[in-house]
Image 1 (cartoon, rainbow, N blue to C red):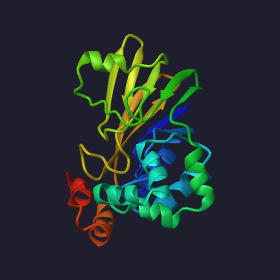
Image 2 (cartoon, rainbow, N blue to C red):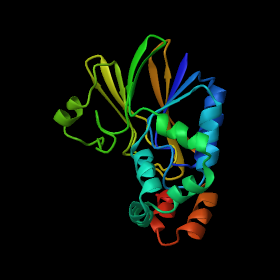
Image 3 (cartoon, rainbow, N blue to C red):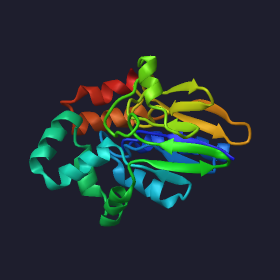
Image 4 (cartoon, rainbow, N blue to C red):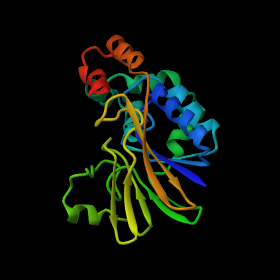
Length: 231
């Protein structure tokens, strides 16, 4: 069996579709998503439709789902987060149905799964947190503190992919599908083969020009949202 590990989709349908096309060719049977399905970009309806309609997807919440909860009930927070992150939350408010909103709210903040004889703990940030970052260049003692009691500890949040091994356990960050920060316009994800336990990091190019045009139309004041696409 093949399992895909994804994170940080950020309402980028162009990147998600490119990755899903590849996963279909790989005949992946399960797709674990470590949070941040929305935020930053402008296609949350299409992304959530894709996730909800494909029972291979198993998702958790990230910090941007928590922010969306706050934005929906607090106008001051909505203004503050719009200045920082752009109009992605407004896109959620305007596009998502009540069913889709309830689905997002129902997602857990972490999960533990046994699939194909492999044990996974999936969270968004550092162990036990949706907001704390764990970067590839963290001190060894910091990395060791973030191992769960499962064989594979999966997380995202930083948008930088990496693998760390300690004994017979692994830390795995698949990087970001929707807003990769190490190599712009190249969605990052992992495919795991449960038969031989091989872990492959993969990249897939996606249409950045459409995203850059949308950013310049909707959030021209936030150059970062488009510049990151060609980092």
